[in-house]
Length: 339
Ligand code: AMP
Image 1 (cartoon, rainbow, N blue to C red):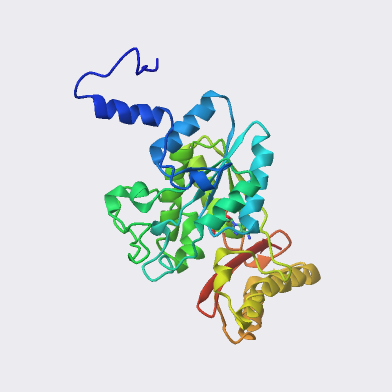
Image 2 (image 1 turned 135 degrees about the vertical axis):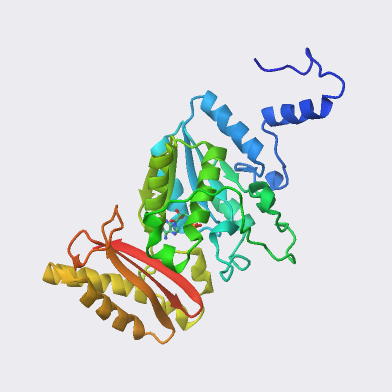
């Protein structure tokens, strides 16, 4: 039974704790942005997020969740739409906006990753998101020590030695896992933490990050998270480039050159349509040549694999999945598709 402040006052000495608990019971959170963004509630503390989620659960509402790193584009918003379909009109949708330091390598773009919370909040409000959960680094990784999110001059630090990680050991050994050795450990750890904060019934991930979505599904199955994972299709620009927050880096002719990833996928699709079975080695070599035709593009990897197992396939046929990664200028891009 809930304690009532008026009829059951706290004992001397317990006042602070009682007041804090009472605040959390009411899901009160730091209202810094709320005045300007009526219609979408901003939650920054883990306690308030969990409190809100439990309230929704008690009210029988289904909780849908879209984890993101912000700098939103239409691809992210398509996940919100898919989440609404999954939870229905009586449900609620939470989007997290958190640039997770533990999934970036020491030489990667964590400090420079594009951020624009104001614009993101506006887009969330328009998309009908109920709560934007945007915790600070200190809130998420208090044990690591961290930079202050609001101090623009502070160097953002990547926590490197947490005591506890969630590690998927098989599906994360290939492709992005080779190119970015600590990336998936950071992803599974933060997604597990976010699931424990948002308590979702449904979480929607993009097919754009196919290996990530496959690993999350595996983690959820192996650790018995009570959440349904939905993988929604990749949204593309008109010229085929997969939407990505990092596309912001593609200035001048780099933007045009970046379409070579999509052209590579189309080339593989055409080859499979034509020949039914194509040796993966031959296809890889043809795709490498195509990528080389763009002066600032450099292929990192291209792989053919089973869509669920991610196991490499040597004879490519219809239904085989393809993923590739490459640099266009200094920007690393990834893409994938079923052939
Ligand atoms: P990010 O903010 O890049 O971490 O992405 C957050 C979520 O959006 C992930 O589940 C991504 O797979 C998904 N996503 C990113 N780009 C796209 C896209 N072009 N189409 C659909 N989903 C996407």
